[in-house]
Length: 87
Image (cartoon, rainbow, N blue to C red; front, side, top):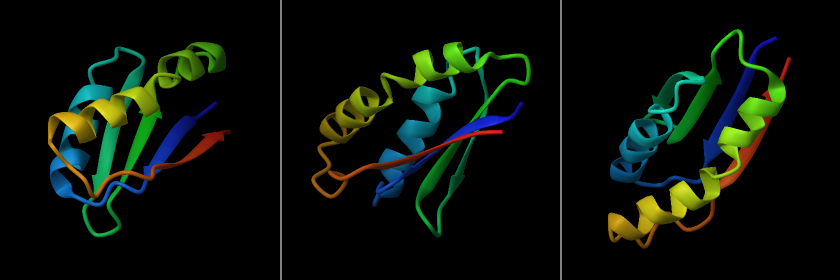
């Protein structure tokens, strides 16, 4: 089963890079891809990760995004959108 979370609404590259660094630190995250043109982050789970564990680690993503926006003193990244895919 593949699982990933797409985060949209990050309007600056500084915040996008910080999202990649912070979410990629979790051992259940296989990789984080950023798309600079669409300014989205795709967070992919490791293959053997179960759905409940992946959802649990992603539950703090909104807090991570808020702290990134505040720490970077960013006023443009205020509305985030999430798309969770569980195949």
